[in-house]
Length: 204
Image 1 (cartoon, one colour):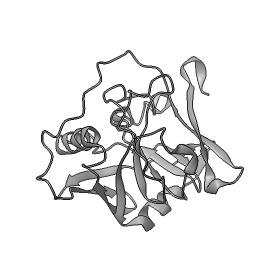
Image 2: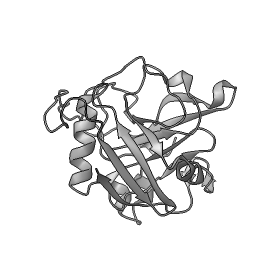
Image 3: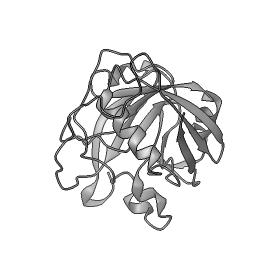
Image 4: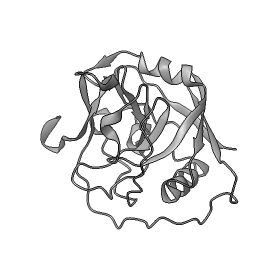
């Protein structure tokens, strides 16, 4: 918890053992959640992908439009508008997750606010898909299941304890070694101490 705004989401169980971390954000003014829609999604049967070019190299996310259409639509719209470019992976739980996509993290001087922006935009689209290594899911506020937005996390290892609590909308299909490298960067608690930017997020 950091200051009066710090809140903690459900615990991340690392590797199913006793080590525990948490996905964190802070309360923001309520926003009207967007209903899931197929608008702007690729044609049925297509598997949309995005390339996330980072300071440590690129990785590719396959977006699961059939599982979470609202989240995929939002992610693609944000990526096409440059909304992820120059954001950072501000939060790392070694052996657990990497978290990024906060629009506030574009500003190197706003580090105290990282993790609080870009939320409260989407309704939950929970599924029975397991949180296996490489899964990409949306961060949400602890106070509301319908509060996801721009921020997302990638699982470095299986996270069985998160099933049914966060919306899975993608999976890393190329460059998992880059995700692993980000997960090995130094941290202070769970805050990355080195700025690791997404240089460009490009749909293909």
